[in-house]
View (cartoon, rainbow, N blue to C red):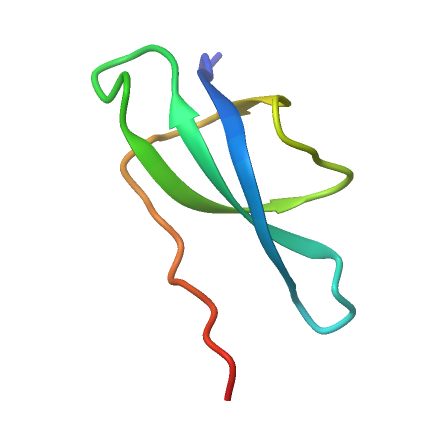
Length: 68
């Protein structure tokens, strides 16, 4: 069974997805080889600053959403 890597949401950036159900967040990795790194991720569900996420990997980073 795979263990997760803890990350804390620092900032909620924007909504994305067809129905606005995905949030783009900046999160700080709390443990693992990338501890202390701040990465941009896409998260589904209710989120707010300070929420702890369990990530399956901390290497991938989402592309920033830009207005057209």
